[in-house]
Image (cartoon, helix red, strand yellow):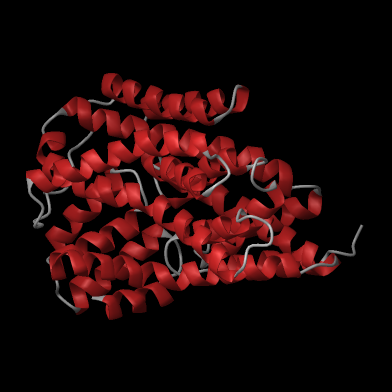
Length: 390
């Protein structure tokens, strides 16, 4: 299980939707470890739950194939390559100085503009197909742009859930429930642990805010609220970390670099955890902070996936529950759209040249389906080439 997942972690470029395609070819078509129907059920469950969908799917496939050890092996294999690359980038970034380095880092910020714009466009078409959900997305974006702040993000998701229960009750049901060795007792335990950490960690973080417990709290809360894919973690983490822990430039440079990595986008946590480690920390301490951020960003999504298995039939049989999830997904589009404007657009687009580079990157992604790593190469090269042009 670990060897197959490691192969996927080294070669799966393109974001969560592309990852699910890699998984289907590897686990269903080539390995025949589960049927297409079971795979569809696992994917449907993970797309309805908060957290990184591709990592959740891999985790549950590992659980089905080789028990709890298989689940851990699947997650580690898929996550480690990009996590180690992002940690390496964090260690090297402070040592890179000069005009060309600044231009290259600005190019990474332009990558974020193109990638997030394409994510908003594609998610909007998929998750806001009617007037009701489009309205919920616009309400969420307006709340964040006019007021802003982490509490407003949570309010936007709550408004989406309530609005979805009232307006989206006719949303079609999802695929059949997957067959996995998770009973009601295990699901309740996972759900209880998820809620317990959501309550206890903030108390520990309040006692010692700039500590490992403080950073663990930030990343756990972000992981618990990420509906709709890895890009949605951007505004959640940015509001929590900037400017108290690091600058916008440092944050967005890491987010842009993550687009060039295989595996899950959530491994940007390895970079961010290392960058907020106390000044003067050695390699061991920096790696510890990086690991804490990484684990606590992924953990809530994995717990919710386990807790959701016994609830699957209940959700499928209650129109209000399905509508609430549809409303949350629509609100997520608004949250990401607001983040596209502030901070991404406002900090990266400084003139017509920047706009042209980001627009070309968007067209390459949306129209020509270019892989994200090509967008990274283009935006960085264009930023370097135009660095001396005024």
